[in-house]
Length: 224
Length: 224
DNA sequence: CTCCGCAATCTTGTATGGTAGATGCTCCAC
DNA sequence: GTGGAGCATCTACCATACAAGATTGCGGAG
Image (cartoon, rainbow over all chains, first blue to last red; front, side, top):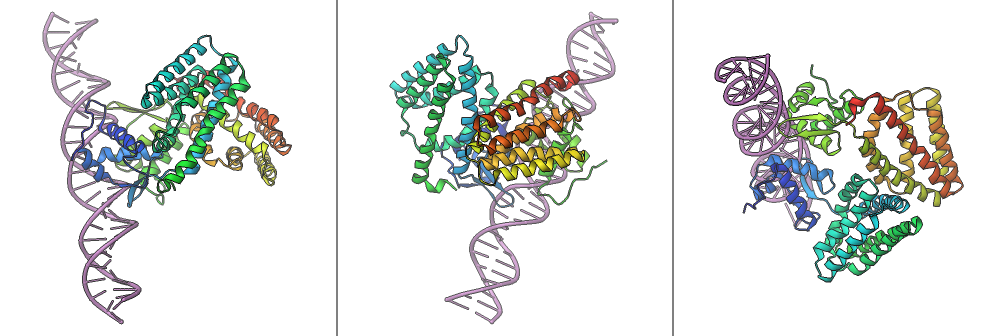
């Protein structure tokens, strides 16, 4: 059953990377699942070589665990790893919001409010995917405003672990609350109130903590 | 001239990764240098396959740039990338020092002072390598005391870019000053003075900024 | 002398076969 | 019935051959 991969991309290896990452984040491949080079190669109708290279990339991103000569498994989610990923994210985003609030560009507030308005539309339309994309864009935009967009890419890489958790809890998150918190952050930026902006951002990010605890209870097999 | 690699390590690919990273950081391979899989394979007396895998890993760490079907080059140092790496580092280390200073364990101060004492010895003996190792250990220990040692690994990955800069300026850095700053940080931790610790850490890390500007002037070819 | 085209020769990407280590099962000894 | 040795069969790792795009330089046309 050779699944079809988009054929207009660059290299086969990169297509496999994307396909596998997608399967992992959407839990089509679940934590603990055992896969093998030839297994995946057969499923996608390619040779083992590009699959192997994809494994290497995904292993470096912490999504796979290659056990030499034994097998390759989809890495279980490490609660402590998620905790520290959140720590990293909070450290950086707090510093970002400080900078933005300290010296807000003249169009900064307008851009942020525009994004929030879009989010409200997506929420009203119950378009969960669009909402999630916009939520990400809000934070990314802050990084851009602070002149450290590359730093966001780092957060994005680490966020994958949390995204797996998030996927397990679809429907739980309250978009209303997220919007309200975004508004509070934007308002603090508008007032150039650094302390308030920092505080609002910390509270906004802290919600992930309870989400994690709940998810561990619901899906203990997916955690180590 | 097949160079010899340590033979008791894990896989050939990992040995090549270590060897190449070392050559890059020590500027044996300089930014802009063009290398090829067969080139390196010949030099180390291995086949292209493990070299190729090493390239992939190093490219993901931002040390190499693989230009498909063209060549692979040692990435030039991106001033903005270094700037943002420093931003990331400062964000995380400031958050770390806040946590440590807010709740210093009872043996924390003793451990830190011990490390500082070792640094003074290394400095007196003019052992630059040992000093650098101890300097790194000081910061890593802080991460451990804050319970986020994994976060340090992240910093370590990004620090490689800055280490390349540092290697170009051997002899410039004043170890006396670094030791004094470490002492100030440790003292603030001892007093559980969060604000002072944060301030001291920021100043400590800010020194890298002038280092970068000076180095760009001295070695413009190594930067993009 | 200049410019265009083609071919030799680089490069990385992909496919495939073989190797060594790890695992698990079978079958025999007791 | 139980335990252990050995073999079948997995795995990831490595080597090698081939493919295809990119570059370079040479030679001929103008």
